Length: 292
Figure (cartoon, rainbow, N blue to C red):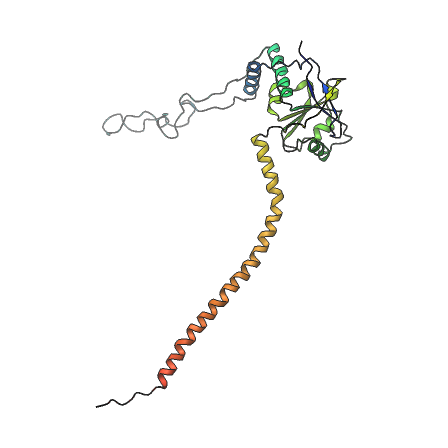
């Protein structure tokens, strides 16, 4: 018999609880079936494709109704149409055509993959439980501060609610790294795509209290997209300081340039005066008489 899976729990304000909570055995039985998860993700991605791409064959390219030159006597290779696939602007050979990429997956395999994804996240300690979220009105700042207190700021977070909570959904709509959906609607891809999963306690009902939490929560793995978002936010914060520094630089540069120009101007003036003084002294001297 497998032991109950325990995860961290938080209050509605983001404060961590002293004790963990025990998750229900269904779906958290500790079994991870990687092959089922791979098949479910592959089917999900295939079903997202529109399949509307189309290239033109010879029958769809306009023009090329007559032979570009006569068959023999020109010295060039024979051609029958300027819309041949060999010509620029011609048709495409064996190009993609509109098709349906949809794939089916057995219901039992889909649920096995979903259970495995939940168990994998619980094993990685990236799955947490939170008290029922109370949002009197949509407030992006309230949800952002809640995730920040939980240490999930800058990570891709999936929030699963027990029932459809419109205010929570609207509060997360302006947060690019946060998704909110019902616990019953989540797919295997959604679970594996997120860095951290926050499940509302109401989705499970009453949960048993687990052991005391003695070690800090591990930080979720940062994806490339989250890194780019964090880098963009840091750049946006540093932009005003850079503008101020750029505004100060011209004044300092003008002073330096003036300081450099002053000695150079003095040198030029001294250089001009020296030849003039020499000419005057030469003009004052009278030529002496030559001795026999």
